[in-house]
Image (cartoon, rainbow, N blue to C red; front, side, top):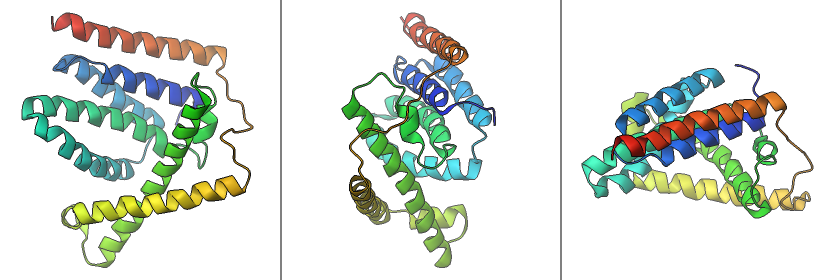
Length: 219
């Protein structure tokens, strides 16, 4: 993996996700360009494909429940766009060193309360990944091996249990953080170097061009 700082990784990932999220509906060519960028991003970060695939599968189940009632034509674009955004952010999160999400957040020009919420969301995602792994191991011990076995094991009840268990663990983790003196701030600074600022500017310019052109081409 290329030596990319946590701050640069986070800001580029956010630029890609925000640009894709602001695309005009049914701008498939622009969305395809973002898809190629997302795959390139995953390759640069050298994320483990099995782990990424399992996480994406779990997340897409929830997205399908939300998008399909909107109609197939609208839902298909929303699902593909969400899939691309999830590839980018999951690749970033899965390649983070343990408990380093808060360090990258220090560089974002957002209010402190929002940084704290993002930090806790990052902690929750780590817990969620751990719970998914435990549930998959439990399914394998019950003889549900392979992809089809895991899909049979996935149901509304097990998905609900997954989030209840992860929420319970998240509350315990937050309580432990508070006991150890956590007050919403981390005593670590993380700033971009001049070359990294240039990289962020280039990524932002590319994303702006793709997103703005989606409105012009579909008029």
